[in-house]
Image 1 (cartoon, rainbow, N blue to C red):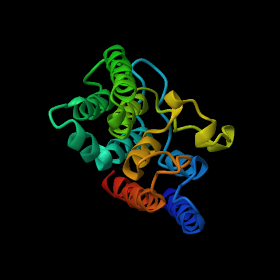
Image 2 (cartoon, rainbow, N blue to C red):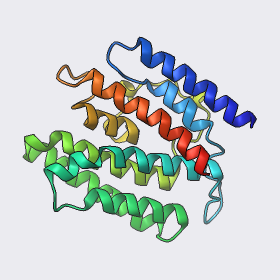
Image 3 (cartoon, rainbow, N blue to C red):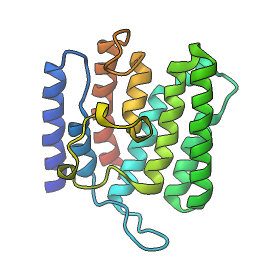
Length: 207
């Protein structure tokens, strides 16, 4: 109960941040705090211990990208790369596929999205969904957002592209670009993040 109260407090603080945001963004520090409070990180050992916090973060990552997946499907209706990546992340979470295979597929999807972005300019926004799906696999492999948020004070803009968090990429696709892109939509971005905060509650309720 105490953990859920703490998460609710962080969700309330994040909602207040959205209310005052000029560009509809939910900064990384708020998302990190919420994700860390979902529970303990991926445990050590071989195979690693799949904690409840880890499982929640993988599930949240999957639904975060499912939200924006229609953007990919509208542009590439016969391309199952995003669906396959999300299924792969689930299989990593359950131990049904090896880390080596999953990481190889993650890297291949990232390269594929690079090619889409550079070779087909009208696919740059859909490619963000593909990048997001690749990062969901990263969550399943390494649980990078399960640590103490006090240890990392970077913002989204401080990160290298291959460090972007999957929901940030999904939100960027939903809003037509990153928060620092003038053509992107603050209204759509805020809509996505309000949905994401509700998704956090749903993940908690189902676990």
